[in-house]
Length: 431
Image (cartoon, rainbow, N blue to C red; front, side):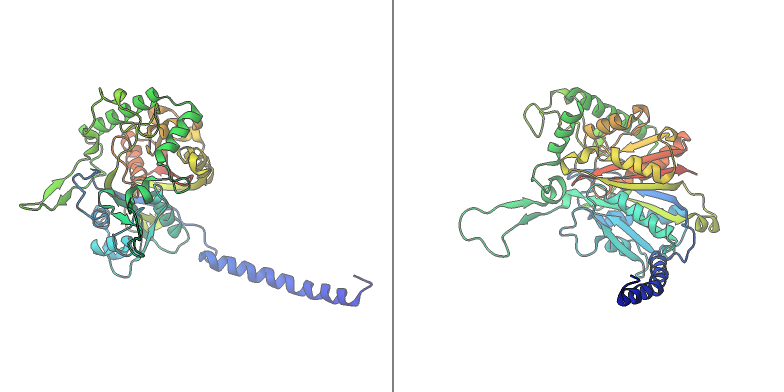
């Protein structure tokens, strides 16, 4: 540059400008996080509530998802003793919003009687929607944007409509086709249009999980749920739902209904659903269900100020992705990331929740992560309780908090896979 005046001038200009640009960039980054340089806030789970899980076309089938969610919102407020106006943000997962009306999360908040100033967001991360909503809620508090957030998820799979694809443009000749919205937007891989169960079959083959192992696991899941129900262990989680009837007084629905509908003797005799001589059956897969779950999240400092005793501290969380067909085993990728973010070693974890989208999901991830089966899904899961897809990620997080308290464990991890190849995981600590 010493031989070229223009280059010397340019070098001098850059010497003056670059420090200024660096300072401005740092300011923009700081403002973008809206923390004013403050430390991230610790986030606690103060209370949880869920509906009993209804079977497909069962007890909850006539109540729209946002109204189910509203019941759980009201319950977490009542349990905590705060006022509805104390909540300033609501984030809820919902996978199939067709025919629900605009902004389903907003509907839930309005039905629950929260102020119209409450900020509302609906999240769709397929089966991980409810957990991702909790993660977003935690992030909002961590960054100091809100102090009290209600998060969770809901799904009424019984009310998902059918779609008439060409009704708008018209049919010219030949037969038309009606699409089942439940399959199209909830239970079908978007990339090759095959049922999600085909991905489960692929995982079983890849990881050497037999039909008998899946059946045995399903029976264990049912047994665990039956025991937890009979001994009242779900009582701190579940709120009764009043279900209007065509005639007469409403009926009160207060207990999960799916686990009661199995016959252990028939499980080994059932035919595989997705491929001939396959391993996935109606018994060892999760069920189609209706339900909702809410978690009341708060900064630890706010909970202390209000004199509350939280259930758990959120220590960390993470997401992961891989090929869509391998979505059942993506928890094995998300969990190590979440543990690293939490600063917790796997050997410190007392209890694990891995959503039972299929029995093979729990078995394959347990194999990949080397988990103790006696610490995994100890009160059953999606196979026996059911899997309302927008709700389940929130439900297993809430259940884990109660499991840690029930058994006096310290650390727990919940993880859930989602269609498209993803998964989310969250690490909590009992308080």
